[in-house]
Length: 484
Ligand SMILES: CC(=O)N[C@H]1[C@@H](OP(=O)(O)OP(=O)(O)OC[C@H]2O[C@@H](n3ccc(=O)[nH]c3=O)[C@H](O)[C@@H]2O)O[C@H](CO)[C@@H](O)[C@@H]1O[C@H](C)C(=O)N[C@@H](C)C(=O)N[C@H](CCC(=O)O)C(=O)O
Ligand SMILES: Nc1ncnc2c1ncn2[C@@H]1O[C@H](COP(=O)(O)OP(=O)(O)OP(=O)(O)O)[C@@H](O)[C@H]1O
Ligand SMILES: N[C@H](CCC[C@H](N)C(=O)O)C(=O)O
Ligand SMILES: [Mg+2]
Image (tube, rainbow, N blue to C red):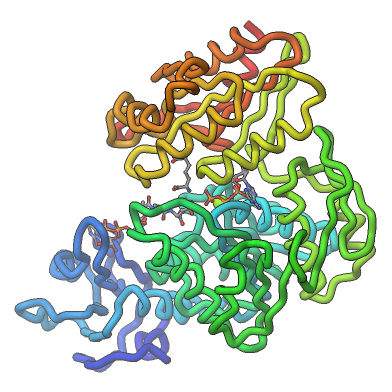
């Protein structure tokens, strides 16, 4: 319970109707959650306009409303606060409501097309191992010092986000590592947060359905860096062609990492094998349990962050060398006849190419690589043919199948993917709509020693078909198919 006058502190408003002297028990942008004593924030969304629900919210007991436009007839029972950008105000209000929890711990955000979950999860595990109390906000799960809280988004909405940060503070967390998705930046889910540091992994093709152009997608990631305070660090991947763009307008202190280019933190690849990576990281040779050259970048980003947070170099490297990655990222199961099944969350053209090139680099002989892959419905359609082409170019056999079709016709999504399969690749490609059948077929086609890649769903425990989330787990299906 907080007084409205405290909650609106620092929020730039153009007009206030009412005394702002009411007690607020809840803050929400969703009229369906309003209970008596709520502050309702009307946000314009991609589907509907929250302003259309103001009256409903007041009927349900909202005592104050934040909006960009007053409703036609002002209901006198509530206070009204007019702002230029209510999505932004929601972030600041949520932070104030929970008494600015992000400032009471060290909050580090990770952005980039691929690697966010891996980097944030490794940082969480590392700092736990170094003896701290830590929070994690990620695609796979949210965690508060060991306690798991299921995650609904890569970056939660501002109210859920600040509530989680508040719980972290209450439970004594020193650090929180969180993923910052481009959607979250564009929708102001991180407004009002006080970051101690930001990490950029890379940017390649994804989410063009939402951002419209690659340039807008890039600008969303950059906006996160632009908003950092000067006592925060801004750590970027200098091998990525857009890595330095992140640093152009930030007030934070700038640091770079890289394998190929000049950078403050450097790594060299020594060995890349099925059971791990040997790297020379900042002058020290260390063996890590993670697989694939892209993980050299992730590990380096984590190491650099630990150094920027003043951790001991030797302890950090010793600890990092023991860690495994995030669930569903290059997760493997060995089946009969030494057939290897890999479950990986690669769901962008770049990630698919990276994981397949890693498999090619580390396989021992001429074993076949069989890839099972689909693309999500109601998401970027332009990546579908590209992902299919990459899968074909880098595999010996490909089974095109369903990912999460959501509201779309799964057969049509596969048709969109098939458009990227040229005549020479068509010979090695089949399409099977049912993902379970596709996995069984891959196992059936595999000869001793072959490698099966199940791409796109990683840790997910469901398949979303027409809005219904049916239980589905790639690793479980693979294990069953191996057993049959
Ligand atoms: C496209 C997108 O990102 N949508 C997010 C957005 O919803 P929206 O703009 O469509 O909202 P809307 O339905 O138009 O409603 C507008 C406003 O009216 C309110 N409303 C609506 C109906 C009603 O009866 N009453 C009411 O008050 C809503 O609560 C909302 O405040 O804001 C919602 C609240 O924060 C999010 O839950 C929702 O995420 C949807 C479910 C989603 O699937 N998002 C994905 C694409 C996403 O965000 N992904 C990224 C990761 C991407 C990556 O891998 O990098 C993530 O961070 O998870
Ligand atoms: N640094 C990297 N560069 C390129 N590809 C990567 C990198 N790290 C991981 N990948 C690939 O991308 C996939 C997704 O990795 P991860 O879950 O860490 O990314 P993410 O950015 O969190 O994704 P999302 O946006 O869906 O949350 C992995 O399964 C792997 O195939
Ligand atoms: N966080 C990503 C995950 C996509 C994973 C894939 N399984 C799909 O459903 O498209 C997104 O929202 O685009
Ligand atoms: Mg993620």
